[in-house]
View 1 (tube, rainbow, N blue to C red):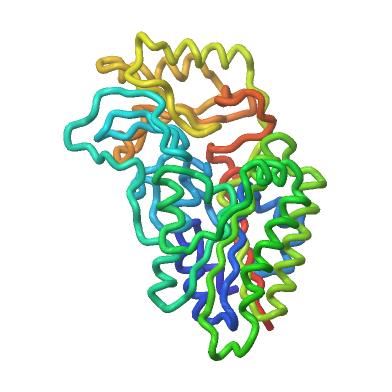
View 2 (spheres, helix red, strand yellow; view 1 turned 45 degrees about the horizontal axis):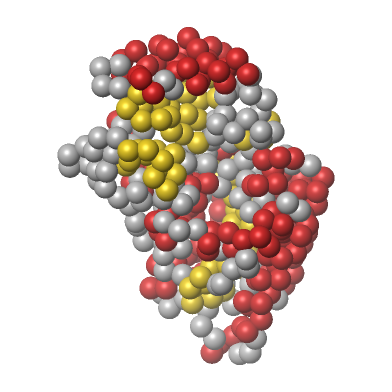
Length: 361
């Protein structure tokens, strides 16, 4: 299969540009948040050309979507998780919105950018004369530099009100139906002589993630993804190339109350530079100066077999704490203990994601 040479989300710009060069009418991208490879199989996406891609580490949306759209990893785009430190400012930020959560000392000479922008799929495609649009839905409402970096180069389609999108996110069937209607609206004006029409790249965000956090890959979620796959096949019959892929999968979680308390004790304001950062099933501390060497030992003793403790990659050290706790089982103390499913760590269920391509015949 042609896509067999693609290995990770960082290959997505090459995937899309390759498909655009061969597409009859253009490319529709279905960016499904939270869909694992196994769930895509269960939904019948094997009717497409289906292969596996590796997500990022951490396996979380802010990191993974930005890598998929730019082709560079977190060390280059500067977003190693949901919550992290910006060295040139010394601030702890929530990447989704750019909100400042806490203030610490800045590193002289540190990069003050919350997100380090790189050319996106849209930039590359527009350079080849392709009309680029994004049905970004929830992302279109987000303030801050992350959404701007993700959608750079695209014309963003006005989104429904946030309350409407939240209602869609609670019902997978309603979510898919609404997203498919928006795609149909955007491609509806593409009728006519294919030879005279400017090709289009249409990126559509499908927020399955919110539902999965509460319910996992139940029958409703799988049935909705099956319907999305069926519609993709029909778009392909109409002359479009359709690319469906995800950012990460999810796994069950059942945080141990004792470990939750232990984490809170570790994140002691008297012993930290900033509050803890991370992304779901991956978390890190920002210990006070002089306490860095002992942080790993404290993490290992407190979390036991529920986590693996690893040293932070040198390329991340200015944004991530000195050691990282990676969930090893469902007892791991995730930040939001109300969730039944989570992600962020490096298990196969979290990091193996689908790449499905439906082509016109």
